[in-house]
Length: 168
Image 1 (cartoon, rainbow, N blue to C red):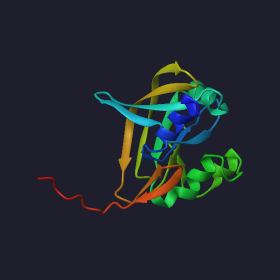
Image 2: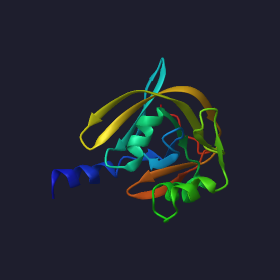
Image 3: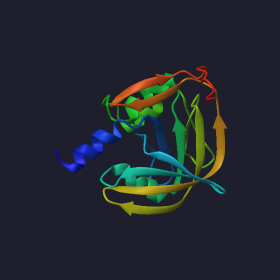
C-alpha cells in the first residue's frame, strides 16, 4: 500500500464536521462539501478551508474572494451529499433547493445550519494538491442541533444533548 493510501486511510479515522462551503459573486455561485475546515485564531476570527486545486470551484473561490462555511446539522445529510456531487444534481439545482438565502455579498447561507461563518478570504497558500484558504470571519450564527459528522468514510449523527461524564 502506498504512503498516500495509508494517509487517506488514517485520515478516514479522523472524525470531522461536515460543512458546505459556498461562495457567490461575479465569478459565479458554487458550493462544495468539505471536512477540511479548521479554526486558526480567534483574534481576528479566522478559519482555514482546503480545496482541491483541480476542482472547478477552486478558481471561483479565488475570484470571488468571499466564503461562507455552513456547518451541517444532521438534517442536512442529503444536502451535503448533493454538494459532494454524490446525487447528480447540477450546481444551479442544488441552490434551488429549499434552505438557501443570499447574504449582502451574494454568498449562499444555509438556513438551519449548526453554524454559519461568513467572511472574506484574507490569504491563500498552495500546498500539494490543495489551496488552503484563510477566511477572516465577519458574521456568525449558531444553533443547538444534532451534528452531521464524517467518520470512517460514512456520515454519522452526533446528538447535541449527550452529556459527557466529568473526569475525576
